[in-house]
Amino acid sequence: MYLSELNLFSFRNYRDLSLKFHPKINIVVGPNGQGKTNLLEAIYLLANLKSFRSVNREDLILHEQTGSFIKGTIVTDGLETEYFLGLTERGKIPKINGKNASVLKDYYGKLSVVAFSPEDQKLIKGGPEFRRSFIDQFIFRYLPEYLEIVQKHQKILKCRNALLKDGWRLSDAELKKQLEPWDEQLCFFSAQIAKRRYEAIGRLSGKIDKLYVEIAGKEGAFLNEEEPLFSLEYLPNPTEIIGLFREFSIDIISSFYRDCFMRSFSQDKGKGYTTVGPHRDEIDFKLGHHSMRGVASQGQQKTAILACKVAEIEDLFNRRDTPIGLAPILLIDDISSELDSARRRKIFELVSSKDLQVFISTTEPSISEEFSEGCYQLFNVFNGSVS
Image (cartoon, rainbow, N blue to C red; front, side, top):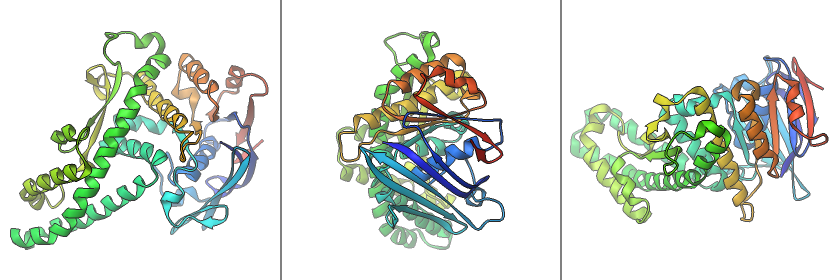
């Protein structure tokens, strides 16, 4: 699978752009602030319906315009599929081959794009919501129906919190009665989310330590070889539920959440919101036995994040023989500042050994020297124009 053509209209600083790409390596070169990241962002947005940057929807539309669109042609086993994403002030309009994707799970998972960008530093330095989002996005790629589970959970949680916010007006008995139908659904979807996250972290954990050492090189050889150097630890809320995921069914896990909601009733009513559940889960990035947030250098943090991204790609490759399996597209934004030369060479070796399309943005044209002649295409970006 690869992106053969991209059309942008009134997107960011691109008024009207049409590009054709190399099926292997595409290098986007130019000074800072000219639109390199915008180009990669459009590809990511087309696949994931969200940006890898923290932005408002109106920021995606060219100044003084009321809407924009992104259109891409994907080639899979010789067959072309057209993806379209319209952007307006009121929302997004996704289409596949001209037909509206009214159910988002029918859109997700068919075009897989993984990005590594400066924004990813929030995976370690930012709040737990960034790490939950990372794991959830990983699950969406191979289990599109998980999106609906997360959306329903968020909707029910919002309704439950609205009741709790005004709960001081009601007696305990009256509030419990009103919460009961919401709790029934919330327990079920909470169990689904927590179990899927546990399984997903297990899938990644089987790959990331080896990848970390490969990318870090000699820097990765300072701990006991019998211990994982880099790992992810799932810390569900409440933490004691971790013992149920391996052997017990969704129904039993759901019953556990029901008991948790009953025990936390007084606290929830007092605070005016739901204090336990997967919306408060944490995923800890660990270097040896320590949380990376406190001990890892900038280089170690970037290496860990990159190992996670490559692990995502390898997981998708392993699923290519399944109905949802597709070779992903990899985006590496601002590689010149994000990775030193040794890490760059290692990641180039890793991606070159796989049958996937890669987009790299950089301020250094010499990056192209890392690839064989004929295996890449170079694009020069300046002030919203590409040559």
